[in-house]
Amino acid sequence: MTDDGPDDQPGPSRQRDVYMQGLAGVTPDLPVSYEDLEAAALEALDDDAAGYVAGGVGGEETMDANREAFRRWRIVPRMLRDVAERDRSVELFGRELSAPVLLAPIGVLSIVHDGAERAVAEAAADLDVPMVLSTASSVTLETVAETLDDEGGRGWFQLYWSSDRAVTESLVTRAEAAGYEALVVTVDTPLLSWRERDVDDAYLPFLDGEGIANYRTDPAFLDRLDADPEENELAAVREFVDVFGDPSLTWDDLAWLTDLTDLPVVVKGVLHPDDAQAAVDHGADGVVVSNHGGRQVDRAIPALEVLPEVVDRVGDDGAVLFDSGIRRGADAVVALALGADAVLLGRPYVYGLALDGADGVRAVCENFLADFDLTLGLAGQRSVAELDRSALRRRDG
Ligand SMILES: Cc1cc2nc3c(=O)[nH]c(=O)nc-3n(C[C@H](O)[C@H](O)[C@H](O)COP(=O)(O)O)c2cc1C
Image 1 (spheres, helix red, strand yellow):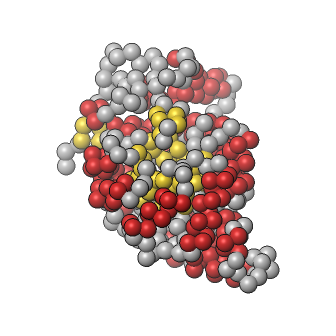
Image 2 (tube, protein in one colour):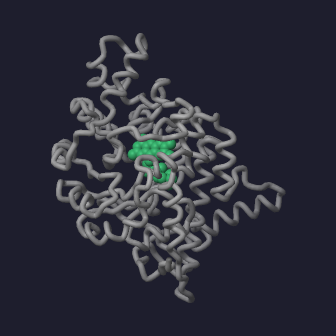
Image 3 (tube, rainbow, N blue to C red):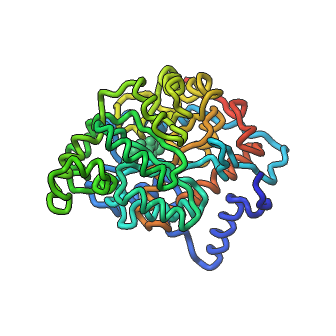
């Protein structure tokens, strides 16, 4: 149970802070609506970075479809059910989360703000929201772990499975030693997809040496180089491009990884119930139903559409997390009601970072958590645990 009283819960307390500031003539620094937030952030970023973050694969049909899929679900609010105190907590892998929300792994954040992943870690820790750190981070996983530790925060590590097993093993060992609580293995990115905006801009941030901090400091990766990356940056970048992904992987390889670590392993990027089943059968402790925010396969199925089937198939055997299109509190309520154990917030926090560093991430997350808390209560739901499909109705057509 939450131990804060009705007024201290995220919704009312955030509202009170904002409206009290309003009395003094102060309005929020960041736009509150997602659409305005995105527009302001894209205006603030340089064109290459804006295209990289906002863009998707191909004609961006899946990005649009992710949002359309949410519009198909309607919440059916219930009344007079004592929602004075709402229990948003969930348990994942034996540990409690104060809310069913994590920050999605998003790489190369140095192109968005100088504070990059460190700023995200600060904000995440302040709000008690676990951060999933990308392998492709701009600062090392150890630095982010220290920032999280200093602020009492929690982290999971997202792994890009390298074609060099020694590099993969080394990254996993480092993540475990640094105190990350779970390993999120992203399986939908064995190849770089055809992202039209980036191709138009002839822009790939890694080629500028951005987002490869974990490789530049990795003993197994450095073993592959003839010279120190400081001396030959281009060679390091080329080597990174060579070893980054492994398109030859199959489900049988997953056992190698689960044997390697004591951490819970979550497979991210699952869009078919059979794949979710395969993940669990091969030793995973959970999956993230995700289409990478519409960045990998154009016309891929919206992640939300497949979520109920995945939950029905493997929900009793592992955790089912969800991302791709979460923008507001109501989106989280829908995904959780469909059976997700938790959701990952993606682009919204990156736009907060772009506009105001750690403070921007904090503001976006506070708004999101407040909106989620109020939507939950106003829908007549006392707890995340009790939320189920009876809270929803699907729109016809
Ligand atoms: C700019 C950008 C970079 C990303 N980098 C990674 C990454 O390094 N690893 C990963 O597993 N997913 C990555 N993702 C995907 C996110 O984890 C998440 O699946 C996606 O953002 C969800 O879509 P949404 O933000 O539109 O809700 C990235 C997404 C964006 C927008």
